Image 1: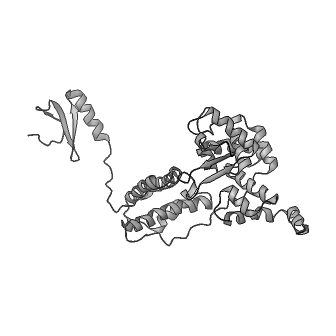
Image 2: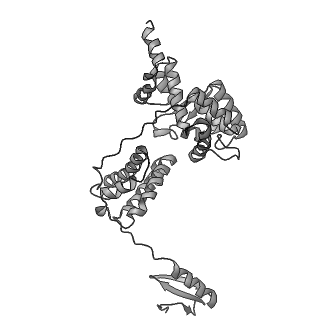
Image 3: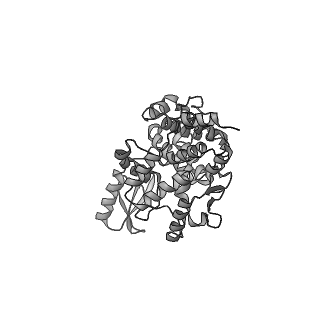
Length: 329
């Protein structure tokens, strides 16, 4: 009959050294010296902090598991990044011990109101989900007021666009910048494009509803001549997998693009973003007199709400407003 011990002991029937640590049995091997080394290694591992079912971090894990099964990969990544950053601050807290100041102290470390709002949204969403699933009775931070979200209203001007292309060191970066400028596609849509999405006959990219943002409708990106040339060339190069890749053949990601624009700052005088090219596209279409309903469809919006927000760019264009005021019906 094996026995318990405060240190390693030799189990004759098993012909190897064994030790019980924190109620768990570990088999250390037949050689005494190697067994002692393994024993000391195991003892050096800090004892994990026990987590109870009603703990905050357990609910975070449950929520992320649900997101992974029922939401897109990008949505899961968004929540995972924020919740995993916050989790160490509340690692030993039960839900009934979570207070608004725990969240407030964390989001106060963020530089922008938009980032603060996103972080608070992630925590509140996880708690609200836990209530709906029946894991907890109430959300302890339900009534926290979110910071005002920063509006991404800035556009890349035509001159700035020229500067970006001029100082882009490789064709791959010029391709993704040009494509976003020409089509107004969302960055995440551009990152996920594959050859199977390309409809060459109708000169468009078709992202199925199951892969599109919100999973509510098919997303169709209509291609200009320049965008069509880029897609045709990349589809030939990458018939399988993502087609928008960097010079090393690795699919572009948000962080890679951010680093490229950070290096471009010395030429532009500011740090641009890929999403600003989308706003530029919408603004250019509106200034060209394209109906707002058509612009909304081209941009992949389900309503005119976002287009009306983008109209703020147009509202500051005095020359355009004067032309519209003088325009005959």
